[in-house]
Image (cartoon, rainbow, N blue to C red):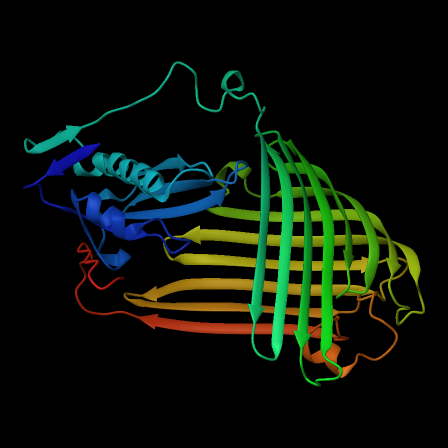
Length: 399
């Protein structure tokens, strides 16, 4: 699609892609019928771009056009869906077309300006994309992934490799996913010519999830997995847990806001490499989890938070409480604040070995260490000032 409006009074647009990127430099360069501004307070239209992963490992981009000033109350939403095999160029062209279509209702709200020229082309077939008639795989997506890393110095050598496989089937009614992962690492150190040090770390896992939609607010599912980890002192762990989730907002508005409460109750059967702090080599436990997650993305910024509580039966001695939050707020013109913080009270590390960790295990992180808590805080502030316009893209000497 090609749209030009050489002499039309240019609409001022704030392109908001902070949620993960939307090829904003390309969009500013290609969609030239508006003037892009640096701050949303100067804009006639705020274009808020959010994205989420689809069942085919692609991305769904949602463009929310929010009118301001003379266009207050005028809003619309468009979506662009990409496949995992789509090139970046294909995705950004689709986003440019969606941006152009969405802005036309603001450029020409009542009548077409005399100097506005539009050229459009649509290519398609007789069968709707993604319909069952054109999909012999019935919406199943399979993935295979492998990587290896070799690194050597005079006195140190590292070898790491990982293989993973996965299968997903995502429909409006069902979410089915299963995957397996194998990781192995070996490090060698020539600390002593007679006794070089060699350490290994292995991790193997299989996981699955099945979820059934029960309307616009309810979901029910079953999740579980099998894993083995030298780092966690787990020779074999099998977990199964039914779960139910309630979203206070309709799932259909997930790109802007969600408030989900999830409860699961299941059990695990575990066998350990070494005797644990609780003098166990194997055990079977029941476990419950209750969590609440809130996500909101608005013109003023983003807000994400999660609170989780879990414990092993019997009793509540072996439990964990965690809080995670991420806030990004536009306080005033050009001024924005960000905060990321997390904290956990940990009383549920049942697999910790009874013996003390050696110096090598501590320094090389070969096993999990005892800790009653974890915390992390990150704070940021940004202030921009100067010209309010941001339409020019200059690629010289890189970005």
